[in-house]
Image (cartoon, rainbow, N blue to C red):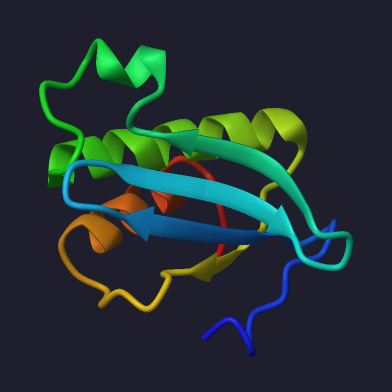
Length: 105
């Protein structure tokens, strides 16, 4: 998957990692090897709204927050790297919330 997706400074790669109890998201510029934004369900603003960070509700809240933070940094278009996970459940909820928040991919 990552052989085909390459993030640049204009079009960063939005990659997610899904563990059993949390979800992590990063905006990555692969040409420079730099992480532009990193956020997870362990983030203090999300932690107060959630009981558990490994469910669909947490994924959708994280998607909204990623969209908001990336728009603050000036990124509206990204390429989505689902990290080898199937596109359903938490991954789908995250992607739909990020799209609803204003990200294009």
